[in-house]
Image (cartoon, rainbow, N blue to C red; front, side, top):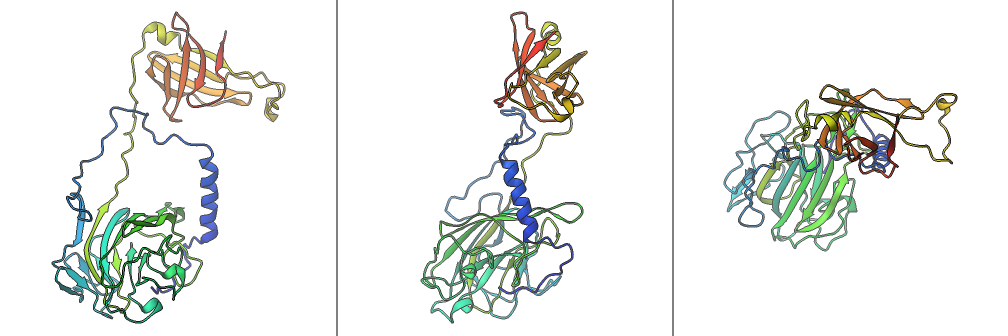
Length: 382
């Protein structure tokens, strides 16, 4: 695959991606709550039904079929915004690249996708190296998964063999079948995310399975396919067409389909997770100030000198509402709404965290601790 170099404008190069990864690694040391939904939320939307195919490799019910062996009506040829019909040859249930007639791209645009495609290399084989059965599945027209006749061959660079993220990652295994035999790709692609100012928020990722063998494992794509490193991201649309490359060899393709991968729905604005009504006694018994003692060997915060410790948790009841502010030896934070999800549980609406309450026989809270935390409980003080 050969691409023309892109403009450096708005380019985010490899060091920036490295910084993102370091930041992500640091964040991963403190696991975040997986979503804004409460665990086991009964009102959380269920997954949409999808009917699997009755035969392996066939499209499931929600797939967009791009080529079913009959025509190339889902594709256009030519460059740029061309709408000319592709000039590739369709016969016997497959489409064959007509060399030097140009790559083809889908009429529809796609972002996050599951892509299935089958291909066969020319038999008898032709030429060597990068000219031996070369093509590519180019996601969003920019991120190429290489197609090449690599059966039993090592006569080209590793990051340009079949199963490679071209120019970036060699495959984890050479799962090639001999020329003339049908091969499969199952590609799972997560597009890059950009901030409003055009800078990179999250690089693209891809997993590739060739002939049932994992060859790319959730790899981070360092930027669009480019002959000149370092690769760099340029802000683009959330959805762009899929391109299948004409590299001058008569590769055959069949059974091409995609599934759009939609994000899981987040809670609506003002979401209240499984609120329960507390009796007046339980509600009034929830209010109070709760303190966690500092360990004897723990250094005091610099701003805590000559000032008394503030409560770790201050719980206030306003009518039927419960509000919680957190603090300790360094001050306190503004109060946030807390939703009782059980008599001994408070859901913090802003932090999407949960407090566990201990109550006495009269329903009065005696201690408070944060769920899934090893920190000691904060106890009531009068």
